[in-house]
Amino acid sequence: MTGSTDQVNALLPEKITKICCIGAGYVGGPTCTVLAQQCPDLVVTIVDVNPQRIAAWNSENLSELPVFEPGLSSIVGECRGRNLFFTTEIDRAIDEAQIVFVSVNTPTKTSGIGSGFAADLRYVEASTRRIASIASTPKIIVEKSTVPCRTAATMRAILEANSKPGISFQILSNPEFLSEGTAVQDLLNPDRVLIGSLATEQGNRAAELLSEVYERWVPKDRVLRTGLWSSELTKLKAANALLAQRISSINAISAICEATGANVDEVAHACGVDRRIGPHFLRASVGFGGSCFQKDILNLVYLSGSLNLPEVAEYWRQVIVMNEFSKARFAKKVVQTLFNTVTAKRLALLGFAFKKDTGDTRESPAITLCRHFRQEGAHIAIYDPKVPHSQILMDLTEPGVADDRKNIEESITICSNIQEACRDAEAVVIATDWDEFCAIDWHDIYQIMRKPAVVFDGRRVVDPRQLREIGFRVHAVGIGPELQDNVWV
Ligand code: NAD
Ligand code: UGA
Image (cartoon, rainbow, N blue to C red; front, side):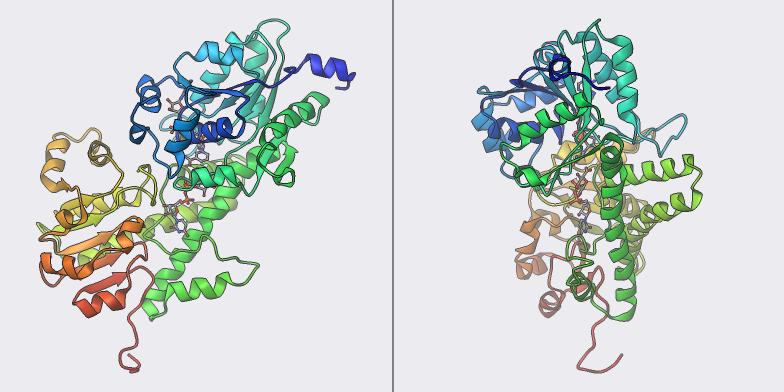
C-alpha cells in the first residue's frame, strides 16, 4: 500500500518517548535495562504477570535481582527509578508506550499437536490480545521472543480482530541474540541488530523508528534490515541451530579423540584457525544446555516435518541426539572409572548452572548427570556459586514420583563451597566452566578426598598433567590416553 508521507505518519506513533517491554525475564530484563541506560531521554517500563519477579527486580539489595549477569546490577542501580521501571501495571505501561517489546517465554509444547517439538505460543498470543484490547494510540509491536516463522501474521490477525476502531499497529521482528553470562556486553556491543519489517511504507518507517533507537549506541552498519519472515527464520531457527550444530560436531570429534589419543583442544584450534571455520563455539563439553538450543532445534525438526522434509528434520534431530549421547557417555565414563559402581559413593559435582556467569539452570547438563548418578545410587554433593539451593532441589525433583523430595534429600547434599563438596568424595565431576574452578588448589582438595581420587572434567577447565602429578586420576572430555615416555601404546 502506498500513501503520502502524512498518511503514513498518521498510522505510526509521532515520536518515541516511551517503551514498554512485556516479560521481565532473562531477555526482557537485561535488554531493556541496557536500552534505558543508553537512551536516558526515553522512559522504559518492564512489565510482567509474575509479581515475585517484579518485586525481585525492584529489590533494594541489587544482589537479589532475579537474573544474574555480570555488570547488570550496577546498570539497574543507575537507571531504576530514573527512566527504568519494573511494574505489574501492565495495561497502563502498554497504553502509554509507542513501542511495545514482546519478550515473553516461548517454551516447547508439552501436549497436543506438535507436543515435545513445536513452540507453545500461548504467552505471545495472550500478550498480543492484551495489547489489542488496551491500546488507544498507534503502536509499534516488536517481537523479541524467539518465534516460529510467520508468527507476525498471527499477531496481526489477533490485533486486527480485537483492537479499538482506528488504532493501527506495525509489527516488527527484532530477535535477540544475547548469550546468558555475557548479556550486558552482547547488548552494548552486538554483532548485529536484526530488524525485520513488511516492505510497506509504514513497515519501513516503523523499522526506521526502531533503528533510530538502537543507533544511539550501535553503529548503523550493524543494524541489519530484512523482511519479516527472514528475520523470524534467522533467529528461530537458523542461528541457534548452526551454533548448536558446531558444539555437537566438536563433541562427536571429542569421542573420537578419547578413543584414539588425540587432543580435542589441539584439533579444535587447528580447525578453527581456518577462517572459513573460525575459532568460536568449538569447545568440547559434557554437552550443551540452556533454555534455547534444544527448544529451538526441536522446533526446527517440527517445522521441517510439517513442510514434508523428513530428511531435513532428521538431519537437525541428530544435533540433539549427539548432545544426549555426549551427556550419557560422560556419565557412563564416571561409573566405569569408579570400578563400575558408584552406589553409596560420594561424588562432588562442581557447577549446576548451564554455563558460567549465570544462575540459570534450564536444560543444564548437570541435571542429566545427576539423574544418571542417582539411578546408580550415588550420593551427590553439589556446589554452584550462583544457583540457589531451592532451585537445585526443584530441578532434581521428578514430577509425579512419590516421595521424590525425600529421596532427593537423602541422595543430595547442597554445599556452600568447593571444599565442603569435595570432602570425603571419591570423585570430582566438573559440570560448569565457572572461572572459580580454574583456580582450585588441587593439592588441598587431594588431601580431603578418598583415594584413589578421580577428577572428571566435563568442561576442559583443569590441566590433566598437573593433576596427575599430584596423584589424581583424571578424565577430561576429548583428551585421549597420552603417549607415555614416547612409547607408542
Ligand atoms: P523467561 O521465562 O525468563 O521470561 C519470560 C517472562 O515473561 C516471565 O517472567 C513471564 O512471567 C513473563 N510473561 C509470560 N506471559 C506474560 C504475559 N502475558 N504478560 C506479561 N508477562 C508475561 O524467558 P526468557 O529467557 O527471557 O526468554 C524470552 C524469549 O526470548 C523466549 O522466546 C526465548 O526463546 C528468547 N531468547 C532467550 C534468550 C536467553 O538467553 N534466555 C536469548 C535470546 C532469545
Ligand atoms: C544461545 C546463543 O549463543 C545466543 O546467541 C542466543 O541468543 C541464545 O542461545 C538464545 O536464543 O537463547 P545461551 O544459550 O545463553 O545463548 O548460551 P551459549 O553461550 O550459546 O551456550 C549454550 C550452551 O552451549 C552452554 O551449555 C555452553 O556451555 C555450551 N557451549 C558453548 C559448549 O559446550 N561449547 C562451546 O564452544 C560453546
